[in-house]
Amino acid sequence: MRLFLRRNKVNMIAICEHRVREDRVSSIINKIMPNWEWCTNSVNNVRGRIWVIWNPDVINFTTVENSEQQIHGQVEIQGSKMKFQFTAVYGLHSITARIPLWTAIHQLSTNITDPWLIMGDFNSILTIEDRPIGSQVQSAETRDFQECITNCNLIELAAIGRMFTWTNGHVFSRIDRALVNAECILHMPIVQVLVMDPLFSDHSPLSITVEEQRDAKKRPFKFFNCLAQHPEFKNKINASWQIKGRGMQGVWQSLKKVRRELQQLNQRELQQLSQREYMGVSEKVHKLRDELMDIQSHMRIIPIPQYMIDEEKEIRTQLNK
Image 1 (cartoon, rainbow, N blue to C red):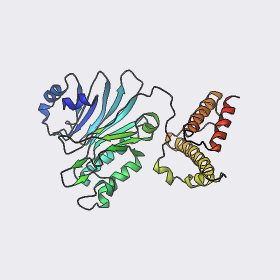
Image 2 (cartoon, rainbow, N blue to C red):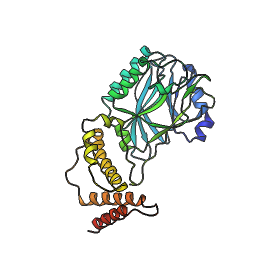
Image 3 (cartoon, helix red, strand yellow):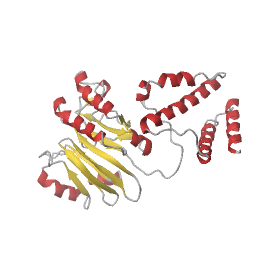
Image 4 (cartoon, rainbow, N blue to C red):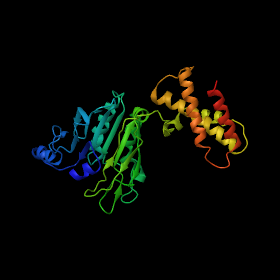
């Protein structure tokens, strides 16, 4: 464990289902990472299934609450302004036993306005694709988890690395995952979770890198699937697709329009900030510069389409005014 933490430059870790007696926790953690701080949920469960351990030279973690299936608190990165809410999860092994977990997450969601990251072993699949081999997936297995994500306005982080997070050598399933709220997507540089090799465990560790953004580079457009259910979605798409143009020029112009419309919808619905009717001069300049960088990033192909040349020229003209 010590080698794993050092090799992967880990400053905070949540360990689930460790099977260590409470009277041995302190000696084991101090042996693995001396001078690190930690908390457990043993007060709610004699087996204390969850540990949260962190390097106090880098992380400040303040426990807000814990229960049999979760530890929740606030994370602050020292030397930066970054802070977020974090929930470490270990779901129990039956549908009924997990109900208090979904209730606890929902109660937390009603009071959280900061970026929020939820990670751990939920012991529950989310879709039928999460267990392609083994017993047939029943709707009752996924219903509570799906409703929790929907009701709490959570989003699953995209995963890279291994496809499944748990195996016994015969059955493969995806029961470990990372969820975030919209504030986390909008204000933190977390875009994906790495599913690592399991090494000595039957579970694959999940890894997320959190770094403070130090520049104002343009952030990639993110589309939330829930927008497709928004009552304005189809109208936005239809209106954006009315731009006339020949061949790929029309497609390119329409896609640009769609992106702009959906970005506005994202901001209004997820960030819940009213859009200003007018932008200041400085904001307009930044917006035009972003558009110029965007068009130029598409002008690396040879030959360069004429409509791209015209678009770049128009943006340059506006910037020179």
